[in-house]
Image (cartoon, rainbow, N blue to C red; front, side, top):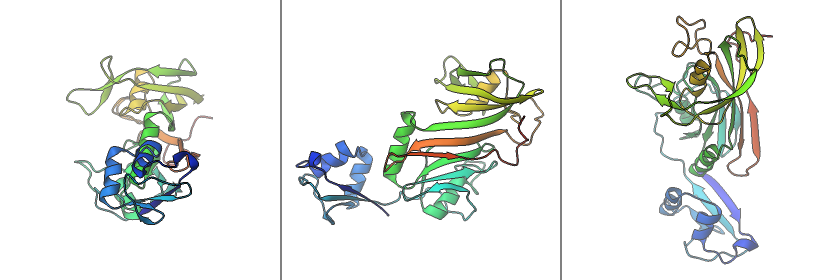
Length: 284
């Protein structure tokens, strides 16, 4: 159970509890209804009424019960980069699936988070072979606010990728819509697809490889892998969009930095994760 408390200021004096929750705290309709249904709204510690006017100095408390777990919890080691009562950031290892799928129902990151924290809502996604930072919300209001921040592009996601060849332009933007390929578990650049934008910068290069820093402005499935292949520089180890047989035993892609507004305080949280040891040494 997470308790969120808000002191009523002069600007909210006389406003109904309902209006403060919906208009000022910007709770979604679903979460608003859930709080009332679970008797999770208090004013100065006493059960609140939706239309009761608030007075300056009163304390509005929301008791946020975690959502029911959708996966069976599993004990596992997790590399935690940040945690508090609202949000967790974990450094996912390569090879771990984030959510259960038809082909993988055990050992998922979601199951590990459920064991340690109870049900969590994962905000961003990473492919199975991609390592790096992922955000998880620990209660419904944090999930609502972080999802909204992601939609507003207030969540900054930066990756490092080792790619085949050296891009002719050392920096640029790839604006190329992405769509599913019918009958295949892959995506492709397609004028009829969803808009997708990736900003890249070559960090280092040697011989026929380059280390590229990439910033996602959208979050399409396999976006970096598709865009770099479209540019003519597929990610090393990517046998779905690059050469076969692959030259490394996993995709050389790592989510190295995250920045996002904290869901309770709006303070900017900035985190980084170093290039992992299971990937090739980067060009000097």
